Length: 174
Image 1 (cartoon, rainbow, N blue to C red):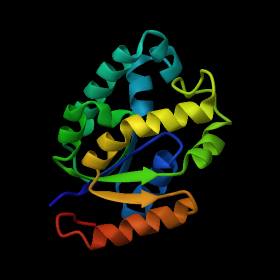
Image 2 (tube, rainbow, N blue to C red):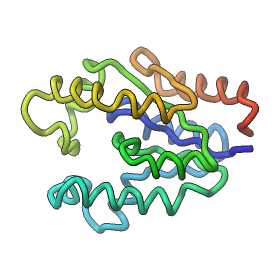
Image 3 (tube, helix red, strand yellow):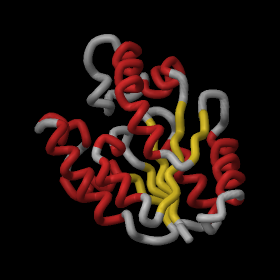
């Protein structure tokens, strides 16, 4: 039986906010992978990306390897976690993967207050979001055990829906 939850999805879909509440409601440890990567690297995600996306993805793989097999945790993954199949394979050893989605316009609204989104800090942000979503869709779909559209839901409602769906899943212990 799996006891951990990995939240996947594009930036701005609510992975970190939902993860914190979900972990509290279920009495599980909360891990935010980007925070872990920043801590290990001693610099921000933006600074890591200045050295190239490949360097960041290598750190991401190492962070997933560190946390993936542990029990009773909620892991908020970075938006591009699905780009390396090894990450998903490792996460699925102990975690149910829950894909959080939202419309491109809602993602734009949710991410517009932050400059800490290196992949969106160029050109037309909405067009970037649409392009990245289109490119990543098949990766997200193949990695997801469950999917929740967060477009019109509160953080609390999203967490409750995830718990409800997990209670129906025989491979997971809530």
